Image 1 (spheres, rainbow, N blue to C red):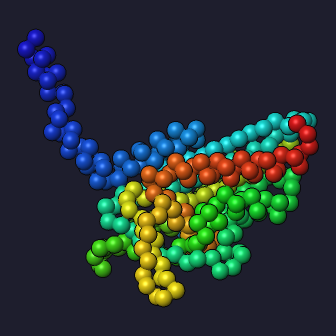
Image 2: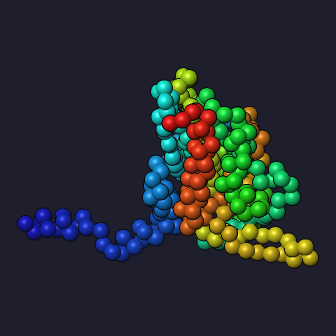
Image 3: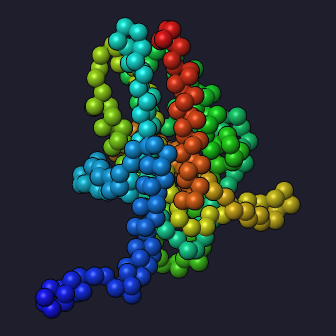
Length: 279
């Protein structure tokens, strides 16, 4: 009996160890990933951590932090099926030091375009692409904020320390390209199957995010922000685009971002559905 009690006692995690493990998880960023996954699942999205993809440039398997998805399927007359889907691939970064994004206000109508310059995949789309352009942009960060970010400064980083944001951006671009290929291969190429799929790379930041700009008089202006939309110029041998639409989203605002994406996908459904005839 004494031996059994000793084994049972030794197997119980003490409070000191528990506190150390919790602190380590938070510092490492794994707790941030868990929280991000929880947000997606709480919004009725599918989500899983540890998204593996194949890097076509370096010909090796890699991993990004998570993939989330929302798929809406509606059966139409004549055994027609309309599928509107969104897949988000994300890197999650934990930081106590503020990240500063440099913003540029829109100066041209096309600056707010957030439509077919994304990674998209369609199957037998019943309408012309131009029908979706306005509604895609209407629920994007570019139009909501009125500005675009073009760079990130990781505050108080030592000059010889590698940046964290750039490799994270590259990773989600490649992961998004891989997901695009997965969705393209998985679809049934039949006339009764109609699909629109948006593949969105994002970076989720658990920490302070600051937007920097200059006033007309040349003074530096800093303001907190929950979001930062980027047009990330990146080209490789395997890339299908010269630039990618990437959104930086603070972890505490991820729920709002998911709701905004829900509005975007619902609006697409409302536009596409009538082209398939009455229910």
